[in-house]
Image 1 (spheres, rainbow, N blue to C red):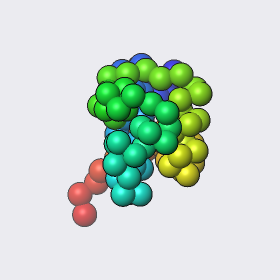
Image 2: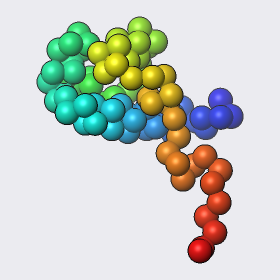
Image 3: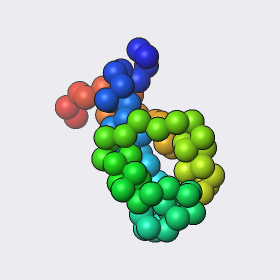
Length: 87
């Protein structure tokens, strides 16, 4: 898992991206959990980076949100090797 780092980092990354994608679409946790057939507490734990999920759950969330794989797994811009030079 070199690209994504350790398991906890990946769960945090997915969680923050999931929350960002949901909020970008103005969808509440209640609506998303209902449409994705998830317990709301599970969704909250996913967004907090506290829950490892199975691929079928990942796919359901992706389909309900209508987003790409990359949107849910992409590293933040500051972590993609961009230079931090002062300008």
